[in-house]
Length: 248
Image 1 (cartoon, rainbow, N blue to C red):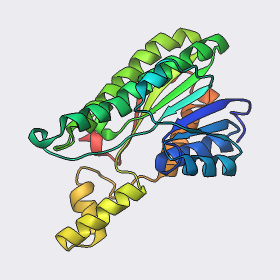
Image 2 (cartoon, helix red, strand yellow):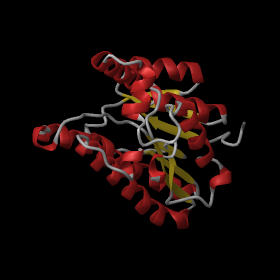
Image 3 (cartoon, rainbow, N blue to C red):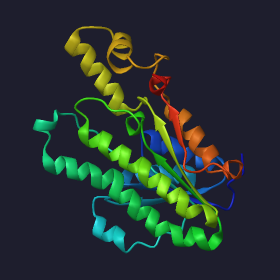
């Protein structure tokens, strides 16, 4: 694949998990990829592997992002965290932090990248949302709120960017096989004294028709296509990859 040769890409949270898979996919398609992550060592390691660049960045430092000048063709907003608590016990600062990371930071990065994309007449913005961007679950008030907000931001960006050759879309997976999710499965299996497969089927994937985790490479494949010339008429869309969860 070489359809992105000559293009530059930035992937946030790119040192591991979905972000690293997206970086590898875009690199394989020919793009020069910048790995943006708070994990400086992880970002540099992957950048060396891919012949790309690294950017050690704390996306919660929004003041620094307000003056950013971002010259990239492809922006993948992937960085995110999860925190689970009932609303009455949810720490207000944690709620604000999660919205900053998953809504305000993507807004500021998009804001910084659009002028360059407009001048070129080409841009691809892919926001890694979640099935929780279109559905809700208990005890995830901040995450669900943030992902719903990201979906809205993506659609507004699509409307404003369309006349300039810039597309903006969301990829909204269910549970993805990452170290964080693997740990949750193992912890739940121990806590409930049940096999890990039963944790998947009866706890995490109760709403899914396909009883397995999404692989990071599957998400990355869709990101790669959305970044390509073939997806030039695809914008303002949300692509679910949730095994049928949102079909209910």
